[in-house]
Length: 229
Image (cartoon, rainbow, N blue to C red):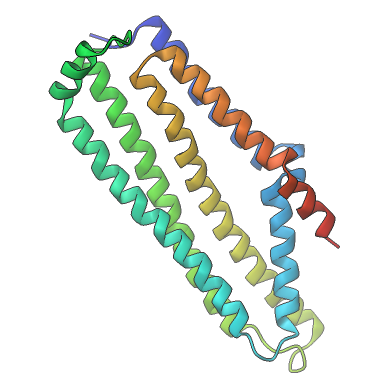
């Protein structure tokens, strides 16, 4: 038997469509050049250009180490969240008993509860892969920083190619980190589904609007725009 009601299906479609639409607008639409993540990629390139003119690059390696540590933290958190998801899946009977005892109008079945728990696990697995790959790309960035020639010892053309390589790998690492973080944010909305499908729709809309504001209308976005040369 299909465990979903019509309202469940509508809520799931809304959730998936909102996430997909947000990803398209931020990553692929003409508006993507105005969002905070894209603007920060411009600052990454500016950072690498400044680094190419420094003889000592301990500051730059320290920045990369900080980015790696933050990515490793979220990757570890993803593993913990996956474990918590399996614990939630293993506690289906207890969860059903709790929902029956609540005064809130929570209506669920074993199949529906397990589907919700598995959905959360899948999201956190996706986030782990994104954070894991971002960590690997930051490692590659640190290697390219070590291989970046000094501006006095190479031609301008070769230096520009080397700068572009470092900036692109660094930006790609940031992109995968952002995708993992986006999965974390939207996983919070999915918790609303455990209570009621309408709460999933409301939570998805709220999380999506918060992320839209941060990417396009926040003070951080305005500062990043103003600081670009």
